Length: 213
Image 1 (cartoon, helix red, strand yellow):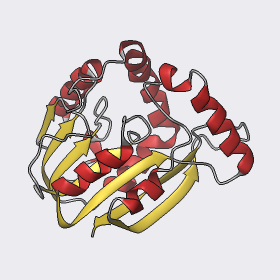
Image 2 (tube, one colour):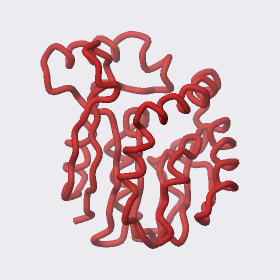
Image 3 (cartoon, helix red, strand yellow):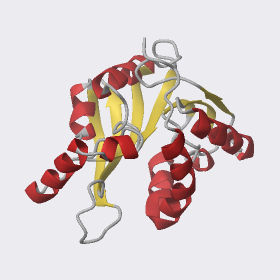
Image 4 (cartoon, one colour):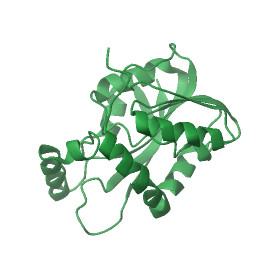
């Protein structure tokens, strides 16, 4: 069983500060759009410092937010206290979610499949805890469509990028992994963030809704 705690103390503190600028740079708008229309019980896998919490609509009755990194989890607990939604923050990893089979109406995964140790196992767990017909709302950076940027992503992953950025792997293809895990992708939007000409490895993004088949 994977450890329920994954420590990236330097990156966690860096991300805690950097994320505010990222939200102002457009991430917050994508979060709000992604979570619109959710209802019922929700599990959030890899909640980070709780940046989704303020975007849950009133129809969401409860959220179980799972975060393995202790520093980010402490920040998430503070965010949960400020939220209007009933949110419980707990430790745990996406590869072994602390939930029963088909317990939740929806699962939210944002910017976390890049850093889990086993994306296929994490997605099997997400599939397991979702009720039949339940939704996976996802927002992830993705493998580039151009050969040149894919090469940049592979080079980044072969260097110190994962160690410096909390285990992040720039070249992963989470959309394909979601489809292979038994989900039907119902909605998909692709975009770049930041939208610049500089070949930033994690600029290609996708967000969407996948349904548990």
